[in-house]
Amino acid sequence: MQNDRTRQEAERRVMEDLLNALLAEDLLIGLQTLTMEELDAVAKTDQIIAGARSLLEDVCSDRAADKLSGLWRASCGTAVMLRLRRSKVQQLRCESLAIVAANDAHNEARLCSPTELMQLVASNLIEMGEARKEGSETFIDMLGQTIEQMAWSLEQSLPEEKLLGIPQAFSLLELERLGALRDRPFHPVAKVKLGWTRDDCSLYAADAARPLQLRWMAVRRDRLLTGDDTGEAMPKSLLLSADEQNELDRELQRLGLKEDYLAVPVHPWQMESILPQRLNPELASGVCVPMNTAVGTYYPTSSVRSLMSLDKPQMHVKLPLGIRSLGGLRYLSAIKLMNGNLAESLLRQAKQLDPVLSDKLHLCEEGRWWALAPHDNDLFADDPRQMSAMVRMYPQELVGDTDYRLMPMSALATHGENPLFGEWLEQRGILNEEQGAMELFREIVGMFGELSLRLLRFGLVPEAHGQNTLLVLKDGCVVGLLLRDHDALRVHVPWLSEAGLEDPNYLLRPGVPNSLYHDTPQQLIAFFQMLGIQINLFASWTVCRTLTGLAKNGCGWN
View 1 (cartoon, one colour):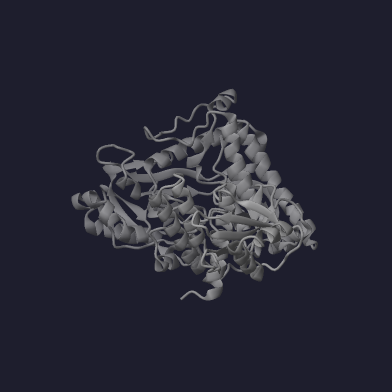
View 2: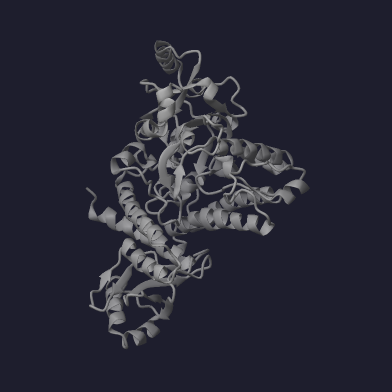
């Protein structure tokens, strides 16, 4: 049972992201920005507006002359009011309290929830022919589920206060948990995992910090596609201890599958909830044989599909899940795995062209994977995408050195009680929080910005959001960057050619718009600006300035 405090905070966080998204996309059509004096004058002439203003000011009592209010009128006549502030990132942003007051012709003033506000906005857009009813209803439902899952997440205990001073594998796991608390910054429905219940979240989400046991599917070898670096490697030898491998082998022997089948790991939720329906022909024909053995203790990371082990910290495993997040199914297709291999090869070639990239940019190896081949060789078929596995290997020079720490940038973007910045400043011996925060952020921006721009000049932009980008720390100092999940590397081919690099020849689905190739440098730069700066860096900065007192002094982006 959710308590009122976590529910209210979940609604506030979702409302803040929703309002800022609506403002950025200019979807509050006809919004008026008013000073306190202008608002007083308008309220005297309109009883509905006066009612909304009165309720808003009961909650937001600050009437300083520089405060701004937003007034928006829905097509049904309801007046909606909120507090606004000027921003350098976008023209207007909502105040962090994210309070929205509404009043209608019946003078029923109330505070709006995110779903009610979106219903008003969607009705407007539908009447104007700018939105569809079905899509709007889906999004509003996602908002409601986001609030539920966010509230559940807030009820979980925060990671330990010491995040950097514990052994490396434990540190990374706790930082992954911290990053999962917010998920993708600024997206109002990023947190929701459609298809999971509250119980599923408590078992499989990173927030819960619960280990799970890998399940295994025996797949006929002649129906498996494999990655470029797989060779003779098998999932069990990479992911399991010797005793666990023996346990798996005994079941394969007992089933008479030892020679012609390969045991492939499966997420336990996927094994029970998705594969019985999606792989019915393969299960019926014996191409895939579910195994009872559950071995391999792994923990969810912030990206949900990727799991990590404390016993084998160099190895993570990425597995498909039949859930929706950010509007997309979290499957793992052979096509994406193949494109990931092409992208990783391109990144490694780029490193050889630049001594700074060679020294400071680190890449996970993602060429060891196994995927069920479609029976008709259609690599874009839906169902086989639900049965695959990729073993991600972290650089030995990093995980083998106890002095290094790997910090997902998503951990920096978690608002609320984020203990990371305080510990980091303490580790560096910096007593002045404001000065220290600026110093840390300069290091982050310097490393992230320089390496990103060095890749950009070759026509390459990784999908550099906070889950995919990890800071490499040594003695508390940022000394490098680690990239993972290479399958969405964006390219501009003319710049590749100028650098002596070749078109990766990504495999693309015919008739479907692609996002990997950018025809102009401006498109490539805009992608980096949006994902790398406006989302990744800006999210980290807003948390940093709030926690260290910089916000009170009006310092930096707002």
